[in-house]
Image 1 (cartoon, helix red, strand yellow):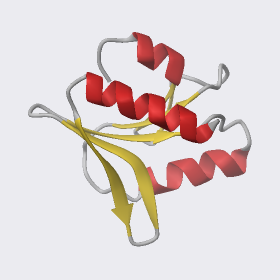
Image 2 (cartoon, helix red, strand yellow):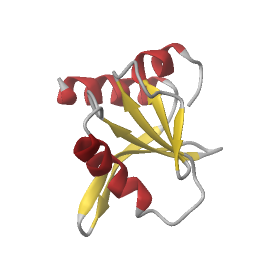
Image 3 (cartoon, one colour):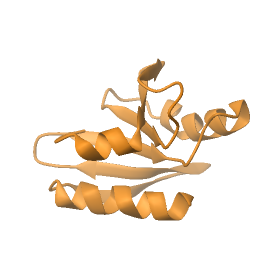
Length: 102
């Protein structure tokens, strides 16, 4: 399910006009770096992060990024959404898909 969800987010970012890249790091990766002429946004995508170990694994790459661009964790979770983890915003991917931006 995770790869399908990533593909959906990837296609939506393209539809919204972003150039989309995988963020490579020395010890991991960020699923997507979305860049437009106006902004840069980082995205991690996971089916669920209800288990603490999964949540930490998904947040880790975003925490390593030392800039001030927005960072999002998108999941199918209905619980614990609209939560901010040290500047990383967790959102329900279905709600995100229905919004016009971010």
